[in-house]
Length: 173
Image (cartoon, rainbow, N blue to C red; front, top):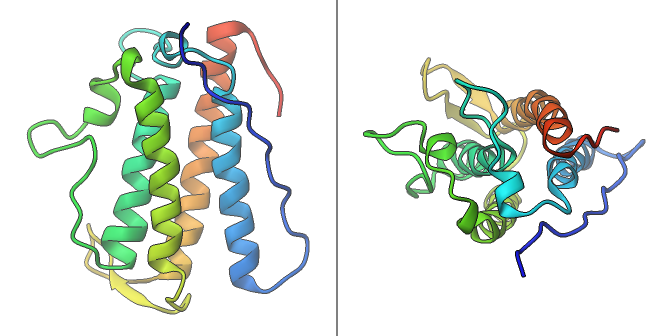
């Protein structure tokens, strides 16, 4: 029997609360939405690419967001020295290019583990914690990282909507 992505309950956005709780709420909802777009699909379906020449797939998006979470929260925000999970200097697009339907369950689990590790890595840091932006060298705050991640998920969840519709016709918010 082929593995299928489990059902996901999407958490509701907080409507009131302090800034940190609100940011975490929007991030969690965005994470849940990506998983929701994957639920019920097999590894083969998750690895289905949109259209040539794009290498984008739902599984690729899960792998990409694993990398993005790790890069922004653990590497930059918390200063952890951890390598990327899928990408390298010789293959900077490994998250999308090296998708293997047979590894979908492991990639899904890795994503879940990474988001938990990211939350833990920055939990004690204040939103005003400052690090250097990896490309510009300019100071950015942990607050900026949260906002950037919410924006990143917003863009990619739009891609996920289209990819899911391509795979099985499922639409919805």
